[in-house]
Length: 211
Image (cartoon, rainbow, N blue to C red; front, side, top):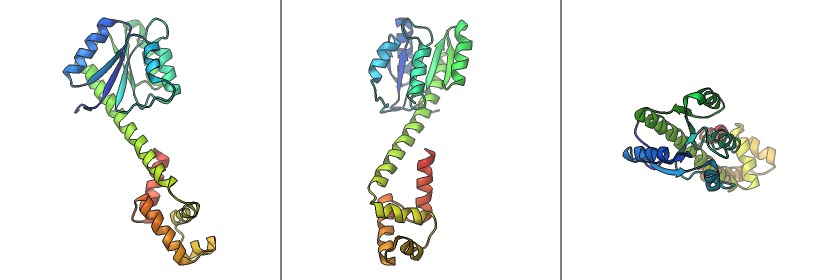
């Protein structure tokens, strides 16, 4: 798998030696990283309305003083951030069952210490690849929503009936407007939504619901 070159890996571990070793490993694989000595330090970065601006993943130690990795994971899960920046747990042997359970609840994976460099980097690249896809979906939704927001109330009424498959005459009768007015609104809807046909319009809106 080709690395996602603009990706950022967040390393959250209370062991400075582990943080430094992971940061060095990622640099050798052309992956940028940012390190945090605690879950508290990482949550300070997140603030209240954090959305990653680039593909990202989190390497998260299970056991840390203060807020544990599991508690931080639950916070990320609650905020809907685990798809935008998938979590890979770093765990000792005793914590494997806990990490397995976290994976079942939405963590991307876990790597047992001491871990294989190649295996870990492979999973990181897959995680940031998933993050890239999720971010693109988010950006697509926002672009489509912005186009929808440009439509007038009448254009929305016409659009819905176009999607329902009604011909212009029936749309005109339903809205008590002329066929020519329907044609004008229809053309404006197609222009604003950047589509060429009713089928393309329906597919685009269906895609918005699926994102």
